[in-house]
Length: 237
Image 1 (cartoon, one colour):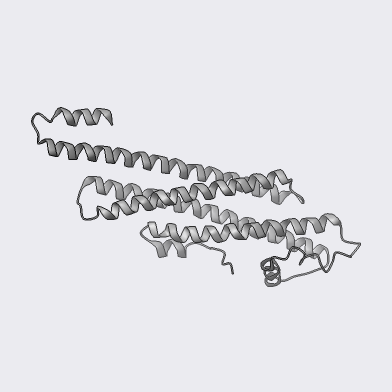
Image 2 (cartoon, one colour; image 1 turned 30 degrees about the vertical axis):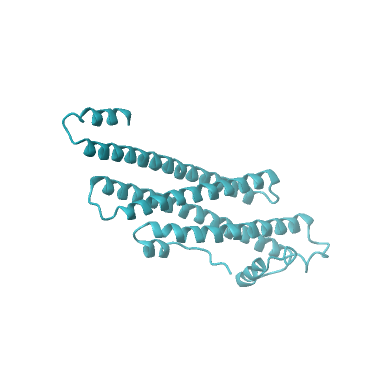
């Protein structure tokens, strides 16, 4: 940026000083814009890395009957990191959008560049958050499947609709209240059912926040209807 400013100032002897000041301001503005673009891109890349790590932790948790609390804590921390970074990216993109709308009447190469960069990052962000949502939904479904299998082992068969109703009740004892006194049922089976239920309860809040965030993000891209219709979001009461 320094070299570009010096080059502009060097022309002041032959050009209109007022035009030079405008040009210098514009160079400074665009340099700041590209700094914002790069920082936003890095944040999106970091979210993508955390989404991949989230998938790995999901696999670890699902593969163990009783996952270590340390693993669950790591997942919880990742969820918070993704939420924080996603809110930061969303805020930056909305600020860029407002700036572009403010200058909409202008016809310049700079404005076209800003629109293009904003569009690319918005779509990249939507893509990453879509993958995160898919990972969360997959984890919920697989956790639900583990609960259903454990209930079948205890002799308590449930339909998918009945299981969903139990999950939405938020009652941690709803799965075990009818079988807790059965001496034939292992304590490990009961513990796994309760553990998976707690995982899903925690996940529900995350999915709701994620859905609300995405609907806001979708406003930043051109084809909002196409994007939202292509996604399989979990509808929560």
